[in-house]
Image (cartoon, rainbow over all chains, first blue to last red; front, side, top):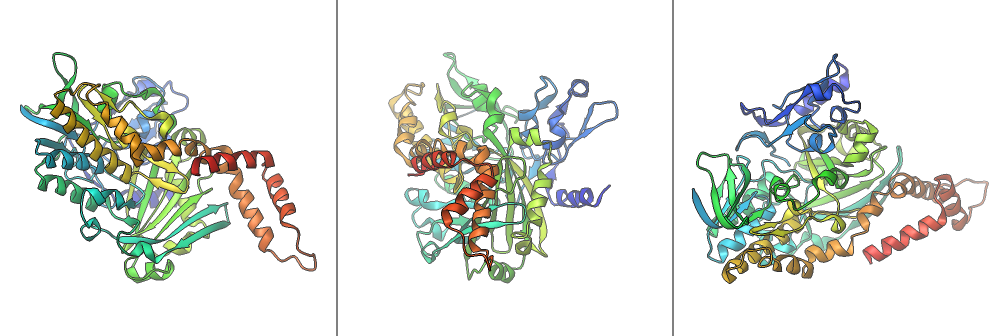
Length: 96
Length: 434
């Protein structure tokens, strides 16, 4: 892991989350495997979309900012199922 | 199941202003918020223009949880290693009724929601409105929530559920397939610094604050930057057009990291500790891309209605949220009083917004978002202006000083700008801003 990546991990660790049990966003990696652009990988401000060796995408909902960038930019129907976390759960900004 | 005259979804500034106006009319109103407390999901640059509160909260400036009053406002045009800044200061803005204030949303939004609750609104936090309820006639008749038996019936639903507004999408009030084209991503770091260090670096005293807007600091992605001072922190961020971000294949935090290293910015934040990183979307389409604002039993306000102004030197959102939310509350009450909450009965909302600053400002500045996001303003003018400033102020003795007209022509040429384009953009700008 490069210095810059580690530094960004430190920055991400400043954010508070009430992680819910339900994954509020799910990614159908079989759809992603045929996607050539995979814009989510670059655009997600929380860096939650990780390309895998098989061409698919590994996604973890737990540290999501709930911004909406991924589903707005994704051009693969059915790849991203996006909802808000259940009430009271998810990101909690205190300096927003 | 519970029943209210009005259900407001989202306890941001729009929702709380709407609930406040409904509650003050004596009607029942629920204010549904998906976060554990109002403001917990919300991020903005950092400045609120409070005069819209004059009608809602007498002497609001004595009560609002303000960090600093903006008395110094700068616009900075940048290239990789240069910056040309127009810096304005006035002590007037340090005195009531003030102008801009820096406030954290985790303080502002609970204060506003508290005003609505004091007036009689019922705040329902930690609750997601998951969909619209329909009456037998097909009109919106309330919302479903994620609570057990959580349906909330209402005569009018006011959707203040933010830039992603799933309620507006469900109602088909805007073209969701083209939303990315008119949306920006903002990412921001809140960086802690001692109060006296902020005072010295930004030349401030007491509760004075500084506000810097930036252009030319987002590399290949159309956008801009901002820096605001709080009491003991500064907020530094970039806003990025989504299509440009996707095309550039650049990570947002990489652009923010570049800005932090810029010679004009790095000394301002040196030694500071990042205490929060945050991100949020911003509706950026302006007047030309507003959704329909009303349907049978439904009104939109705030970001859900696309009412955000990102017009270069003017960056405003909370004031439009407050203005539209309050009007939505009044229009809902008027429709209930008339006994007609259909689209026709709620049509007064749009008309009232057209008469107020909310849509008057958006209409007036309708061509400015396109201008500010244009290739020339984003990629060419910052270089042109910095070249021009550098050649005007650089002393090249023994060569004599060149003429200003020649310098302008050369700066334009070197940056690929034709003078007729410069004139055309100036006219668009004058027409829009004038």
